Image 1 (cartoon, rainbow, N blue to C red):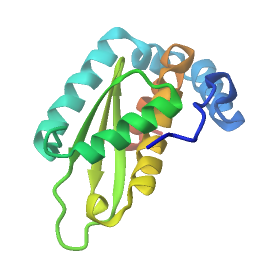
Image 2: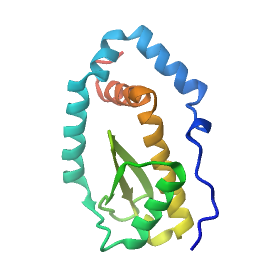
Image 3: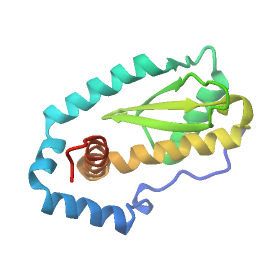
Image 4: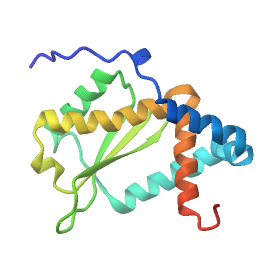
Amino acid sequence: MVDSFPAVRLQDLTPLPYQQALAAHLQANEPEAWRWAASAEAREEHTAAMRAELLRSAYRLDADAHPDLHADATLAAQRLGVAARITLYQAPSGDGAAMNAAIYVVPGEAHIVLSGPLLEKLQPPERQAVLGHELAHYLLWERDGGRHHVVDRLLHATAADPRAD
């Protein structure tokens, strides 16, 4: 199959003004939290926690067992110009589990977790769109030295901490 979609030009993809303003606000008004979240130590903690969470909560979808899904991920990555190593996972889905996807990012790696009956329900173009959406997060979080990934980690840490005001 010939891909009729041109690759996305990265210079055409920019963070939304809200995302830029939020990053600037946090960096200016929460300098201690920003320094911590942007530190190598915090990135290492995040990576270790992410890997542990993936081991606990999902199983890996190998390319040999899921060649069509991996082809969809490769195509989405090519269209977006993502060169990261992509690993795909399935979260256990109980009765009535919602279809969703999430991405966990470390430099050079994109770990995409699918939830619910996404593989059974979506056609290849729909899967490509979902995977492309997740990989767009990767692009956002990798740009500007990882600035927007720092924002994401800060907001998640703040939302999970009952002491945060």
